[in-house]
Length: 177
Image (tube, rainbow, N blue to C red; front, side, top):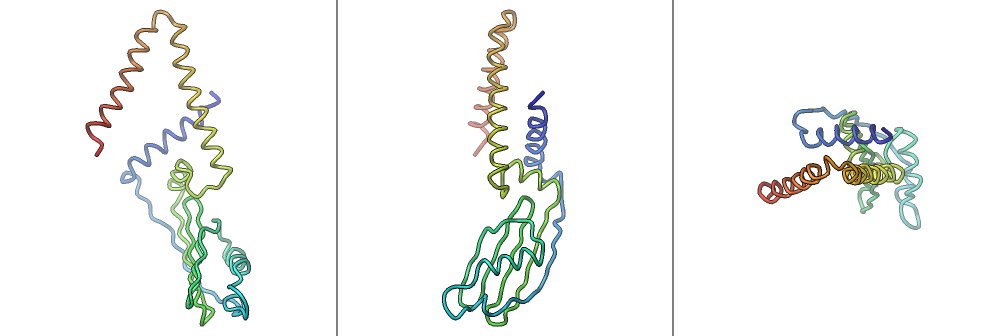
């Protein structure tokens, strides 16, 4: 029972990931504009002030994701934030000091799917996914081990386990390009 929530969560999100077309969702897109101090974008010495720029965007727009990318060229700075079911992209014009920010949220189902994948979730959730994999592996192995203690069902259980493994392999070999 300790693994019930994990098994159910990964079973449900495995189905939703495999049948995305059955669960259409409409992303929520929010566009914002703003301006930054010129000295952050074109300081007299060195590179743009990445910390000040990122902090300004995080605090002003309450961005949920973490910094994923920070690109600088002569005309523009691009800052990207990523999180589960979330993306925020800012394009900052280095000559006018103006920026456009587009935030996209994809809803609860996509959030659950991203948690299933471990996409843009950080180290703590990565540990949850790893612990879940270990727990599910242990549940599977204990089930296999227990069949050896049930004499009347041992042969049938091992035949079914072998049949299931071979069937999966045959489906893969025959139908997966």
